[in-house]
Image (cartoon, rainbow, N blue to C red; front, side):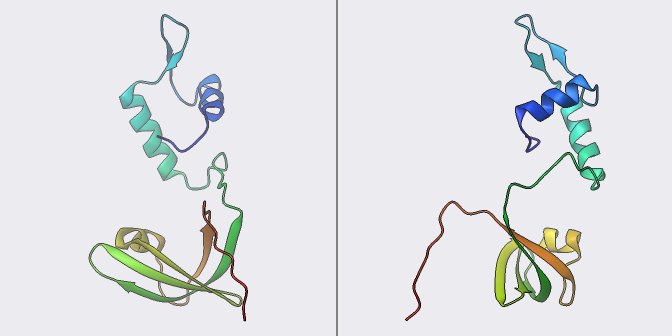
Length: 119
């Protein structure tokens, strides 16, 4: 639910950053209210470097176009010679302050990559 490994949760519990309790069998358990409190704390501290991104394909670039409706948005980024297009929520566009001229990084993690040969 937090987007991290079990080992990370264990380290947070050991450092008392995340409150847990032990079950009769010795496993750690996190109360739902504690998990909600912790999730909000994590979201409010964007400089928390304990979270990492596993995507290795990162394309820093410049937002060139944002096309949006009430729910979804299409964001285009020019990253060097590469044009990257992403479909994200309009809420995410607002939260990130995305508009033409803003620097952004497109992080791509795909389970299926198609390769073609140019003619």
